[in-house]
Image 1 (cartoon, rainbow, N blue to C red):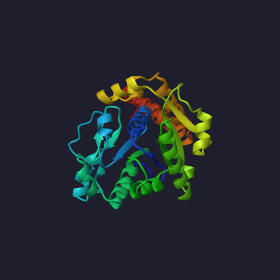
Image 2: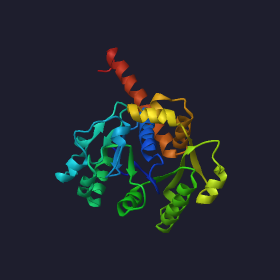
Image 3: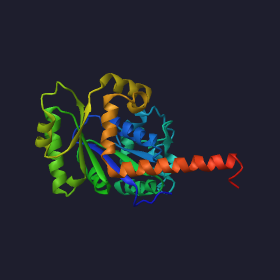
Image 4: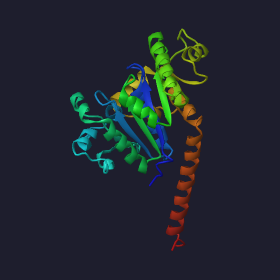
Amino acid sequence: MTDTQNTITIVIASAVGGVGRTTITANLAALLAKQNIKVSVIDADLQFGDISLAFDLHPDRTITDAAERKDTENIPFYLMKHDSGVNVLPAPSRPEYAELITSDFLLKVIENLKEDTDVLLIEAQAGLHDLTIQLMEKADIILTVSTPLMSALKNTKMMIETLQLLGLKEKVKLVINQFTSKTMIHPKEIRKLIGVNEATFLPKEDKEIDHSLDTGIPVVTGHPKLAFTKELEKMLEDFRWFNHLKKQKAKDKSGFFHHLRLRTSGQGG
């Protein structure tokens, strides 16, 4: 069991839709799982969540089933496991079922999942809603996703200003998705406009990302040398907790194989 105090909770949010929250969530999860880190994903875009699609999962149970039974104690039963090792709690299968998920219920689900996961990723609905703000308050990191389009940047700026008023800006990590060399605004100007010192710029890789969504194979798995993958890896490596977890998991794996060798050689008792 994982100490809930040590679980890293990351909310992936955006001011507007269509900026790549689902793609980033799925690929972050796959990168974490690749390091033998226990990762769970909650699709909290309750009306139109696509995390299951991104992993080519076909859920026979979703968060709706848990809500109907008022079951917050057995959440692992409702998880779908992807081949990458990522556990997914799917969004409701129909938008009208979203009203069954109360904020109190979802917050209890989060606490339950944290008992047996190292990193919990939560994809939030676009915009700032009461539920999204409550999720952000519970988060250690708020990945705020935008594209370099001026309309998206304008709304992202307002979102982060609002988070500052709520005392949450220190949790924000800005991610600019679909960035290209043809983008009219320089990265330095984007950071200045939004009011942050640092940001991650993920390159536009339409062909590979579209293919990954069609096949359910994350880009970072199918294209490990792609610039998108490298930048996402670089972002993770900037987090101290990630490097700590990576070293710990490598140590655990080494210890496991050492014990296995002793057993097979007859020295392990």
